[in-house]
Each structure stands twice: as structure tokens, then as C-alpha cells.
Image (cartoon, rainbow, N blue to C red; front, side, top):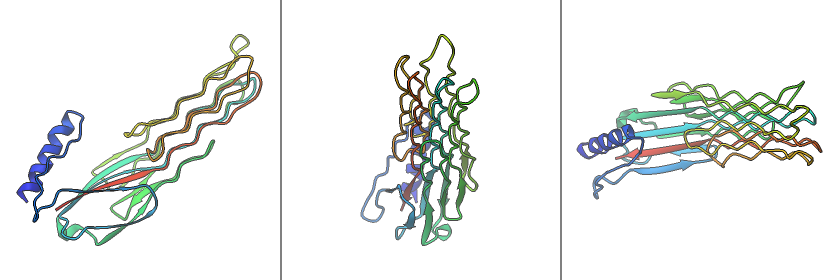
Amino acid sequence: MIRWLWAWICWAAQSIRGTLVFVYPGTATNPPPQVTDITATGTFNTPSAARALWVRIFGGGGGGGASTLLVGSGGGGGAGAYSEKWIVGAANLLPSYAVTIGAAGAAGAAGTASAFGAAITGVGGGGAGAAAAGTNGGAGGVGGAAGIGGDINLAGASGTAGGASTITTVGTAGGAGGSSPLGGAGGGALGASGGPGSIGAAAVANTGSGGGGGGLGNGASAAGGAGATGRCIVVAFF
């Protein structure tokens, strides 16, 4: 227990400085923490003799919106929400947890929610970036709704709006995707004046971030980038 407490104190001290560093002197009877990185829906089996779990989970990111010819560029997709929770004490740990990993939104589609059993639920997926319409660029997708049950429950960051086309400015940039705490949001594409539109950049895989909006040229419209699948990172302490 003393070793586990020392690891927690080190984590808290480093977190204040913005860097997570675990210092844990493992022994044969007190092994070091076990990290499980979950990127697909399935089951997490609690390790034998675990005394605590630190769970971090991200919803799926939304896809970016498309540019529309002579109108404007697409908005960036919203990031999935983020939750984290400490489950402390062997008596409070279940033998296993059903883990749902939020799906990534394709271009113009929303991401879906993640969950860690009944301990953390509804970690929302990011909304889709809108396609350009009327005389404006597309609106950015709304960030995923905050989850329920975590010690920390944060809504996802929203994507930014795409640029509008004008008589003098034909090539405009798509909106950037919203970024999760893991980073990796897709950048909005910049369409070239006199050329075709540019497809928005996809978010980095398994970050829960949003995809970038499509960029407008004056030759053709272009799709937004896909969002990223969610993720769950579980650290077991013994």
C-alpha cells in the first residue's frame, strides 16, 4: 500500500507540472503498474491482485464538412469527450468491464460515444463539421457531450468554421478539427484559387480528435477529413 501511495503522490506532483510520470518501485510482491491501451470495443479483465484502476477514456471524433463550390469551405469536426476515474480498493473492482470505444465519424458524420462498463458512461462523440452553405463556410462540429461517472468529465473541443468564398477570394481554408487531450486533430485544407478543392486532413488514429474541413478552390468541391476513433487507457496498480 505504501508503494502504491508513493506512486500516486508522484503522479499528482508531476500532473501539476503538466507531465505524467510514474515512479513506482516494483518488487516480486508489488509489481509495477500494468498499462492496457484499448482501441477497439471489447472486454477489460481486471488483473489478479489489482488494488486500483486509473481509467482514461475518449469518445470518437467527428468528421469534417465538405467545401461547396463558389460558397465556402467545410467546418472541422468536433473532438470526442474525455473522462477519467480512479477505482480504488479491491472490493470496488469488478472482475471485468465491457468497454465501448466510440467510432470515428467519416467525412460529414459524427463520432459515437465511449463507455467503461457502468463506471463511466456516455463519453460523447464529436459532432460533424457542416458543409458550406448559403454565403458562409460550414460551421465547426460541436464537441462531444461530457461523460457521466468519472472523477473528471470534460466535453470535447468544437471544430472551427470554414472560410467563406468572396468575389476576390476564391481559395479558402477548411476549419480545423477539435483536438482531444491527446492532440492529433485534422487540419483544414486550403483550396487553391484557380484549382480544385482540397480534401481536409484526417485526425490521427485513436486520439478521439476531429477531422479537418474540406478546402475550397474554384474548380470543384472537396470532402472533409475523417475523425479519429476513441480510446481507453487503463492503468492497474497492485
